Length: 444
Ligand code: IFM
Image: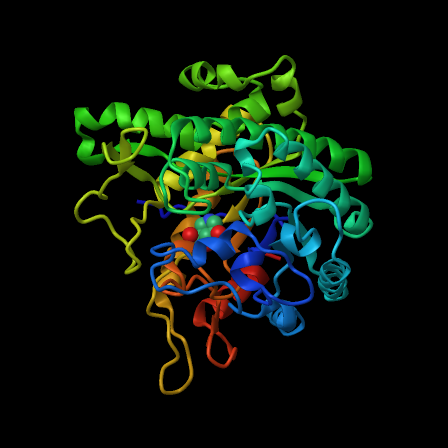
């Protein structure tokens, strides 16, 4: 049989890496930064597996120059980072914190100097605690506070940054923050979850309008964690659980934002919080769909959680490349096809990557993360197959540049292309960084 020829990525295809503020910056108590809901979560019993915090993390706040140098060495073309709302506006609104503003100025300038495109995400989960004290995303006013924050960012950085994402992974922080208690602020209640969904959608729409009006030539997208939801063990009793989780996980945000509708069950549930004109406020034209994907979800009935569904087990024997997450590159390929057909926007894969707690330098000081290379190889191949089938994918960002604070898992998971020794802050390029460098070079 003839071997299928390997897909050749177009020369304009963009190769990047992603991080987020709370996960890498550290400097949590420096230069006027306010508290975020994750600072509080880290200090709540049981909030983080290893009891750690993002107070120091990879110290990117001080070491961004070195990190950008390493990105340049790898050949990375775009860096997706998020701005910490509480660093710019310590109380979420009102007084601006000048040192925080200056930090992102320096970061952006240093990226541009090395020819790396800055891709700025406005919100990656670190809501200022002062706003949570007022109800956070359950308060409709939060959409307006977010729009003001977006305007500050647009005015300050829009002369140099042209790529903006309004939010990262809407359904993760709303579901785990307000229904299933795996993230900040740790509320568990159906009404709060539904309000958060709707208000975050309103914030997204307002953010798009602000960016569009203040940044000439802006390319604006939103980042969704879209993952096929399957009933655990294919059992009928888990089908309804899977269908409802699918609505909350995959449909609650892109459908209203891009198609202007909530899916049927959500439409009913959101109705009490809907005001005249809301759907038009949410559905604003955007330029691209950001997809974060790691693998499918297996759902099961689970009465301990407020919606009656929970996370089930992967099928026995599913490959996991040693990292504990099932590896299904063909599901990724199919997701790209589905998203391309349903939302009809260019797609950027804004996160994909491989964790694992075991990356450590060997006696020779090398980090030989073959599992990550294997993972990235099959996923990038799957993306190529989707593109061959006609899907308009324009870029790919590895999660993540650096080992960092992995939310509820603390420092027990390492996702970086670059190993960080959290005691000394020494950076070591893992074998996967060299592999990614070669991949980028080959496709130019
Ligand atoms: O670390 C996270 C990131 O913040 C959001 N997407 C998934 C990553 C790995 O779990």
